[in-house]
Length: 142
Image: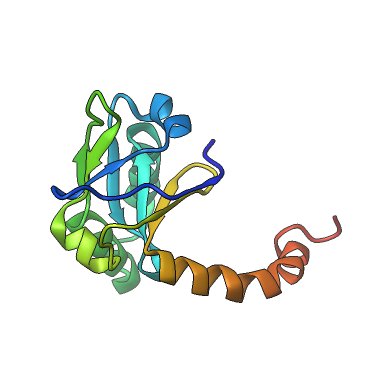
């Protein structure tokens, strides 16, 4: 499980230091790809495999399935953290998420998200107002 908020930086080669608390779960490798709201999503190989298995069950006769699979897999990059805990973020993914040097990395249960700091600030401010309302929608009756 991944949780917390961190602010690592991209180096001049487009590598990102993974937060130390996340590294042990990703030593065997990971997949980084497009996420929603123009962030990047990082999956462990195991969880990306589970996602892939579920997508295999989705009907390819539906255009929405084909579109989603294309966008997800076309941008995906398999990475293995180096000994210092860095992963490469390919240029097209950095461009997609508007990543420069500063980044915000958040744990999001079974995945990690990498955000441009301004985009994260805007998103989290907008969602903070809805957070209590969402709890009723996500967990009715609790």
